[in-house]
Image (cartoon, rainbow, N blue to C red; front, side, top):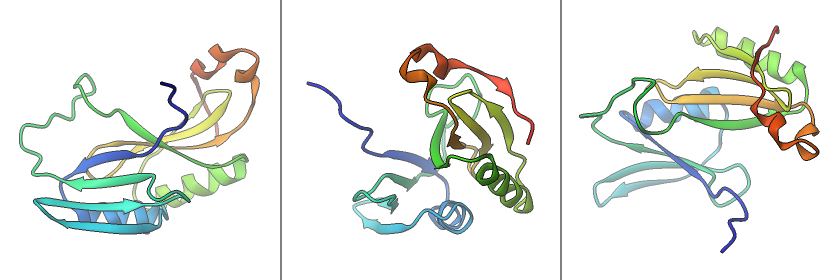
Length: 146
């Protein structure tokens, strides 16, 4: 068996409608489907595949948002290849009341923030293909001035 690509990511949220406003309305992910049956309340988003990302409404009981808790740390979305694209995203996030943290990973330049349920989100631009020669380069972590 060989995994060929990431299929999709599903994030648990407390309010699907609020998550849709965030991921579709603010971040611009197109909604391709919704599920409202069998106890499931989900929204599916597409980036060109049948679905690449989804949110599933849950009660939130017993969950922990502690950084040390087991579970999803963040989901990352590529938004381009230029710092101007990243600056534009940062301005949009700040206008929406979020405080994104810019990080330079060398291979990518990133913004980290949380969705309304505290799930980690990363928006990034590709910045270098140095990882092709030195795979360890993906583990770089420096502050980024935007």
